[in-house]
Image (cartoon, rainbow, N blue to C red):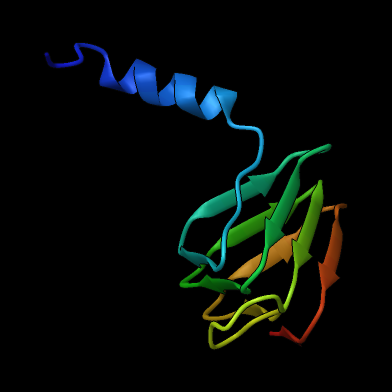
Length: 96
């Protein structure tokens, strides 16, 4: 039997998610906003590439708890920008 409402099912699953984890946070030109009160945790590194506009008004933690190539680094490349009044906790290097 096919689900007639796959989008609604996906939204319901996301609404029920308590904890979302990522190893690498990579953006290739997106607009990203961390709102006040939000917490984002990346265990591998963050890379903003190709004119990504990143606004942090919440909390971002980047740990080196990974075997990926850039664990713990926060990297801003190619005309990308980071702004906002949030907190950044970066365990390795801030590369701009």
